[in-house]
Image (cartoon, rainbow, N blue to C red; front, side, top):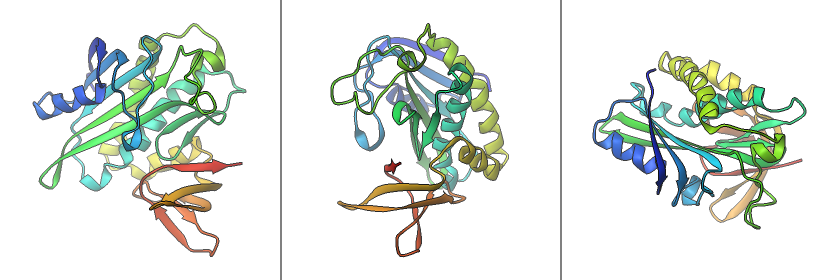
Length: 247
């Protein structure tokens, strides 16, 4: 794909910029990158810590000709693309992982995340925004994030170059995006499973309403949902939300 990069010193949210571009008819392939986000978002409306000049904050605009049922797979696709871009940049002893559905971890700490938004027009996808946030140069996080967050600099020193990281992500994204457009969903799901320890045999907890529920992961469904086996042996699909792994 031909990508057009739009760089801003500061914006509220690169995802919001990409969504506005999607609504106004901008062709797919636009990437909005900012040095800082003043209202960066993660899943479920949570804020994303977007420290000035320290991370990669980018959102990609897509106009895929696929059924709306395929939309959840874009989160998994982006996770695989970022994983494959970062893995060669990290020391071999550093364990890079994907936590379903959208977190990139080094060890058990979050180094990056994916936030996808899909806009429908009737029974078809109008556009998809894929937001990618990676903690790059951070050496210190707010106190509440220190137990759960890390950065490439903390894990592997430096120097790091955000444009180069994006340059490494783009061809991997193109590869998996083109495959998904050809209907190669099983290939994507298989690759995601290779990249993640959360696919099979991981004890996890998730929320059902306001109560936590636990089980053992049993792979991905064709929709991208996480299959989880409860203590009574029944298997259910976790369609959205957060899961917490336990070692």
